[in-house]
Image (cartoon, rainbow, N blue to C red):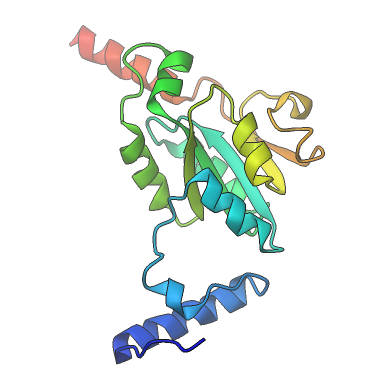
Length: 192
């Protein structure tokens, strides 16, 4: 396959990106034709399934609403990235958040939540799902492991069987969540 000619700036960018990919994930190949046009980390479940099916690196998975990004989310994502080569974050879509959290949620629509996570260096791919749990997307993309935060027991994490028990729990600080943060902000606003 012949590659098109690139401008010097494009060639330098491709060389830099290819070197970084080689050093960080020797098993993962992304051709030079994809470097310039494929910058988005946001992928559909189908795209992720295709990516995971062709590479031998360890893909980690975590999910949630990520409605108001806070320090516990950052800690979870760093912890999760430490357990895998590439981290996938799946977000509940807006209807799913409403069913789980109630009216008035999410605070930020799905597009904004995805863009925030896409900007984080510990996140490699961002996707979404419409169900109340991520079981269907886990079955479709088949990650190597799952990371969850909170008070879960490993065996109770959705997808536990699908990843053959490769589940890691990130310990959250008590009473620290988006829901608690929203409640505190609302209370303080009403009192003033």
